[in-house]
Length: 179
Image (cartoon, rainbow, N blue to C red; front, side, top):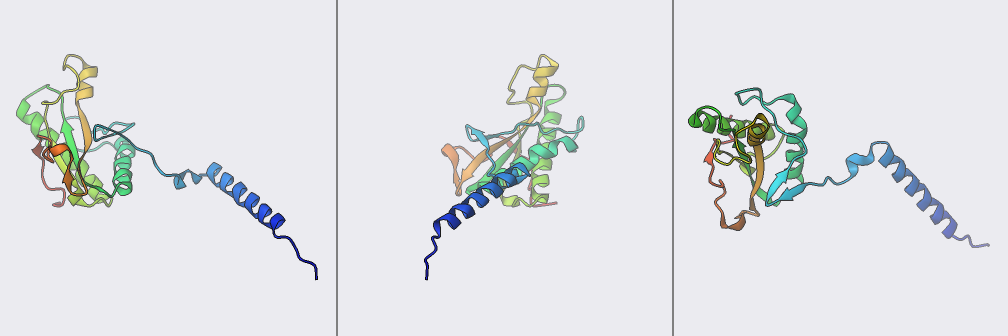
């Protein structure tokens, strides 16, 4: 009886598997690729802004892409035990009103994440009002930069980062576990 070599068969199988993987990547296999995230100074950087309807805490539909990225980040980074959701405003108007608005917006974002399956105990929504501007409040463009939501890793494996308080100095916006 003649022995058959398995080498040609194995090479053919390897070729077919490689070709099918390449086809999957071209046909939408990108969903299988691990997602990459950018974090600077413990802050998750988003490619798209989180937007609200003017003067309120109701999220615009355009925010869904950025918010989904935050959810994906928390799903992938289970060792982040607390993410601070910071609300910031520009300096126009009454500072007390701005403070409350920043808190309501941070809480709205946290509740959106909870509704999508994020554990509410992993989120700490806080408001800063207009107290931490990125730019002077002198032009419409600069004011837009100051109106933002920021996502900061506050604790890793239940340990505060850098000895800082988990709230980062912001005012607690409410409990995202309570509807």
